[in-house]
Length: 499
Ligand code: GLN
Image (cartoon, rainbow, N blue to C red; front, side):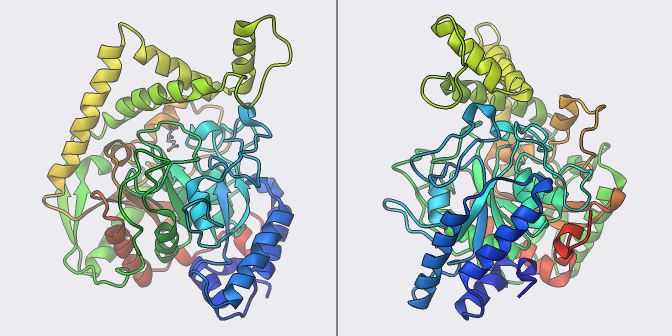
């Protein structure tokens, strides 16, 4: 079969269970594609022998009739999840060639399991490029090069899970993991025309995820459809109390169960601040059309207000760098990772190692983080930010009295051009405006493709739900996808053309 990469996760899984294709055939097909599309910049590390071995054991598991629904389906992981069989760099020179002695819990759950963790038996194709330590919105901050957008290779794929979004949109993997601290699953999913969900903070284990901002970091799946995301999220989530103290003490949930429920009567909150100045008209038009489709399915649009939306930007860009400055202090050239070759003494070794190992954006965040935590500024910046963070979370609780989910844009524009010299770091920070509020509140959020805008680039719609309402978000997204066909549109790289 030539077009295996056109299949969704669900379709791939069905063929595997019906024994119409083997996991090994799938693995070979995708390994060839990964090599053929190296120029996209999505993959950082492949290990074909390991992939083939996992595929063979998945085939054996399917043969026994004792397989999980996802057994044998290929997946690739954002290079922020540690893996014992693949190098883990987090997109940084600091971790060049780093090999972890264990798999992240999410990787183990989706793959071959670990101590006390059952594995779904998915087959890992390799590791995917990302912004250095997940800091960025365009995947232009990776030490290992930029990633291209499969819809138009002169555009960015979004970030920081840009490699994950590009790999899925180019048909280099039917699914990928991503992480979302301030939008890094939703925004690249939106820019690449795929579906992605960030669950409630604590729902998926952070164990083995290279930490950026620990009170915000959350893992989630990226795939072509909401149904695929539901399958993947069911396998990813679950308590991991011994390894991650912020993991929620809840058993795994089957998110596919409610997918077919009617959404008639669903109250969808439309925050006026998400549709104010700054939202590009092409994005707005696609979102408006999507909201009209949801209304046709019986949903009711409810005007709401999230008055502190604009404050989410300064609040996030104080809290995230503060936590990053602390988390990244472990990279000192002693314990693991890069170490400068020449130095005079210990202090000099620290300085040179960190100067060489970290990229510009990471250094900027470390400086901001140390500044806002320093004596004299802590009260003025960090504490204030924490207070407003709490208010942002309360604003959401207030609006969830009158609506069940919230809908709006993911980003103010479609994917911008790669290497745009006029773009400043602040432009990227501002473009996070619609994804940051849900992150600060720890709420689940997702992105689904709803059309195309300027330059024929994909537009994503964001759905935000209350705590632990992933099932409801996936249900609304699935119903939308049953009624429309945006999620079935394939990038030129997927169908064999040039982009
Ligand atoms: N763009 C945001 C940042 O740079 C979000 C990144 C993320 O979610 N990892 O911090």
